[in-house]
Amino acid sequence: MRRDCAAQLIRCGMVNSSARIAWRLFHLNWIPIAAMGGVLLFGVILGGFSFEPVAALIPTAIAAALALIVYLYAFAKADQADPKLIFSLGAISQLFFVVIIMGPLTYVTGVANWPLRDHALLAIDRAMGMDPEVVARYVNDHDWLSGLLLRAYGLIKIMLLAVPVALTLTLRLVRLQMFVFAFSIALIITVAISTFVPAVGTWYGLDIAPSQFAALDSSLYTAQLRDILGLRDGSLRHLEMFKLTGIVSFPSFHAASAVLYMWALWPVRFVGPLAAALNLLMIASTPVIGAHYMIDVFGGVALAAISILLGKYFLDAVAPASATQAAQPAAALVPVLD
Image (cartoon, rainbow, N blue to C red; front, top):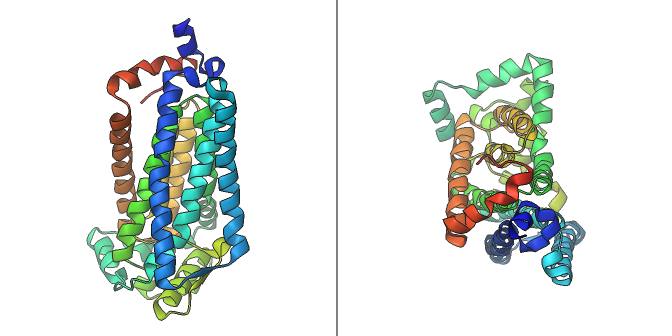
């Protein structure tokens, strides 16, 4: 009976060891989120920032409502609660909170006004034999390629919802919680590094007007340039949540998130290879659509690898190897290829 319960997680609810480990990790994942929120609150007060209330409250209320639903449902159903419902809504809530906090946090830390590092980043690109101007001109001259990369760049939001859905449907509950942890840590490190290595983007470093590349969408770069300069001269202190661009150049979180998405979804049959192809396209779009330097992309990939390793240490610290191995029978429905 016990073995059948382990093999049929959906029937056994939260009794299964895999679900219990994931539930413990879910609780602990609130710690980095709370830490980020505390830093944001401190920075807002110290920097004299204000928020447009409606735009700030709506996404926060949605994320909080999802978390409340999860805890009320888990309390009401106890061991009979459906893990798919708990962990899909729970992960979406936590990821939503991470995005809500980290967007304005990049602005709050931007007032540190460390010297811009565009020329240093551009020099590193050229030392590696990769000139961003050459790449931009090539893509600009091929309309089909610029359109493809523009669509690929926007996949970051779609993938953020796809990961919780795919991993809960295939009962990879522990992996989902490791992803949430790695995603949070990657953003924390990204903001910390970009605070001391601020940059505007390739057009700024090259001293080229984006209008020279008519086929490329330069709206993200233009918004980033406007906001960075506004933070530095003190004219930007009122933040509207839906208009924030996330002013980070090095390391590229687009590249980091693409690697995290690929890692998270790779074990899911059929979905894994498709996700890998789409996220490789997103990485390819980052230097062009995001106006990132090539070193930004390499930094983002390295950051993702570090975050995944930290996620594995996180799991080992919370659940001993014996408990993790005992949870493996829960994967009988769909093989886990870790």
